Image (cartoon, rainbow, N blue to C red):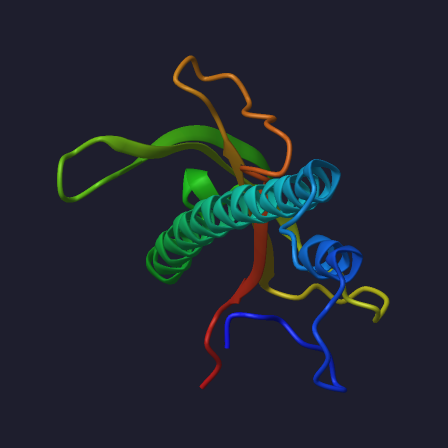
Length: 171
């Protein structure tokens, strides 16, 4: 029972015992270093993916917040147009910027700062001598930092623009 044998049930020679022992050894130092190197590259790649995902989430939050601010301004201007189409905020040309801050409702910290500006123009009519009684309004939201400078960080805080045409309701 204590003697190792081969397939023919004869006792193994001492050289055969050495070969069996060598083939069943663990990993060598080189194999271990290669495995650690491959593992480290995999972890670095996973870390970059996590960083990119967090950056994308931040960009999505910033753009969604900017789009909401643009929509709010358009709704305000549309309501103003219904009440008084000749209001000063609806005269032809560029208006603004107005600074807007988006705050965290939980702790009151500032999440985003924007400059809101808008341009009012006429709506062209392809018919000669005809004028369309409507206004083309484009609202532009530009992210700014705490010092009111345009925030130009790569991959984050991009400018958002939304356009609408205001016209009188016909009856």
